[in-house]
Length: 119
Image 1 (tube, rainbow, N blue to C red):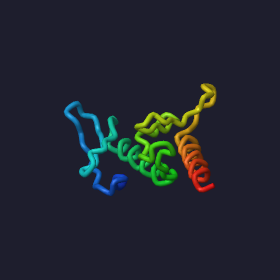
Image 2: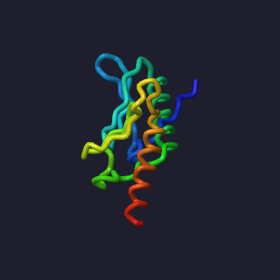
Image 3: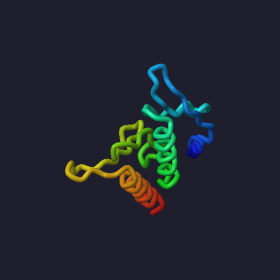
Image 4: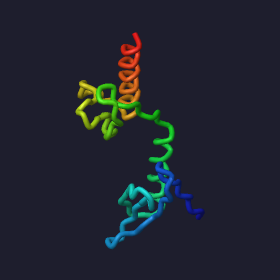
């Protein structure tokens, strides 16, 4: 069986597969120490890491916060949150945003704020 190639980390660093003392597999970046784990098999953790990387590469990059100008610090569970407290999330519990929907709406709000400043 051919072993999958491990994609590099989003920071550009080299990723490595590690096995912990309990026998579980994980992937860790040698540069920024981003870590994804745990899995029962090496193949599963490599596939999960590569899937995460492919998803990161297809998602649009976040714009700075329209209120404080800093980079948002959290994108997960359909939410974007900045250190200043600005948040983008769905208020409909029946249909939460996907991460990409939250990013798209965050960037749209940034553009609207930017357009207002130039008027």
